[in-house]
Length: 377
Image (cartoon, rainbow, N blue to C red; front, side):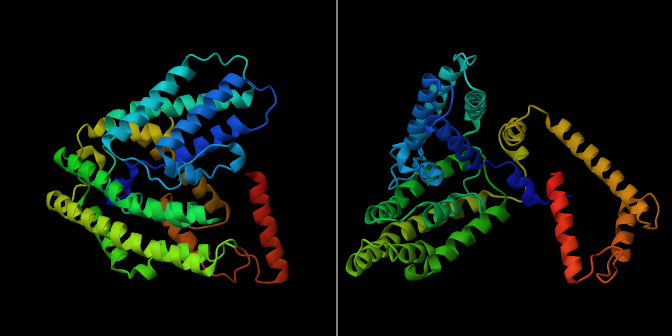
């Protein structure tokens, strides 16, 4: 039985595919490959440059080497306004047209694969343009708070004073970005795109706990302080000055922005109910089908995917039941009963029929068994 929260999150989209795709496109655009076709690599390069200009957070996450000579504004945050999203979809349309009409006959296999992947990604993004405000902004797992904290503490490198100043600029930019998200949140509420109450409550608690911390204990500060301390070309005085600027940015930008966002979340909470699943959203069925296509890269219907899942469960259970019988597990043809009996029969770690002995020889057997599984894969 799938939990309500699992149903909720199944309809949400993440930035991971874009990061993976951009990494591939970057390697094609800048790598020294045989049978180079300059035109297609120019398209890859230009798309990458224009994309990270619009989505600098993804540019930072991809972490392009300096040798790629691609400027990423590491002091900026993504533009989440309607105008910013319009520019992003215009970019998708431009490069979808270019690639769709490009003759791929003379490309190398790697170039052709990269082109086809990029075309699919762009086409899929354009299919989802009508749902661009469907994904829940209030999201404890994938929402702004977690993505921003990850960006700053894991992806934003601090190897120089310039990197540190970019970090501070990003902290200062939080107020603007949260204001953009708050306007979109209000639009979602007006259009009936409201997460279940449990999700709203979880997110509110997450933000509240984050800003209840003293600024000097906040991970956005402690991560920065630990890393700037390792930058050799900075003096103790300059490091302290930068740390003070981080504290000031938290106090004047980040914390006030979070408090503002909590106020908007409280308004949404008043309209939230306990219904889970994107079926309740406007055009929810169509949005669900689009999410399935995004996550599976197929055009299978929800019914086909559900039937496939049921059939796979039945197939795997039948295989397991055969294995249970081979090792002498007693019971009927009921899978749950056989599984319960299996746990009882094999529950003793000292039974060498089912466990390798806890000896040097047994450990060697264990390693060989795992290596055999890995070789098979």
